[in-house]
Length: 103
Image (tube, rainbow, N blue to C red; front, side, top):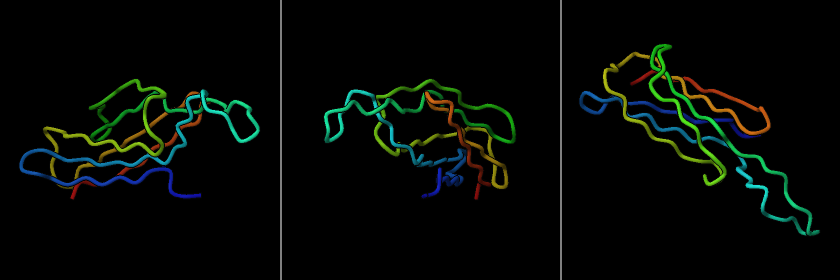
């Protein structure tokens, strides 16, 4: 299995630029397989981010995101060496997180 998430954070001036790719199938439940059976819904419902353990983003998302969604955040008040954590939860209860240090 591929990595659950890829995350990178760099300082751009006074802001931290955080880029994250979430490895997830993002099925709406509306598509059918080759036999005509509905493919079970499986999509991310919540995404959050924290800077040194303090929440900086908390959002609800839905089935409208593409497979393997890309997320980019700009965080004010960060500095090189700080820790960024991004996490998600999906409609099946599966969850994951990734952490990186700002370069």
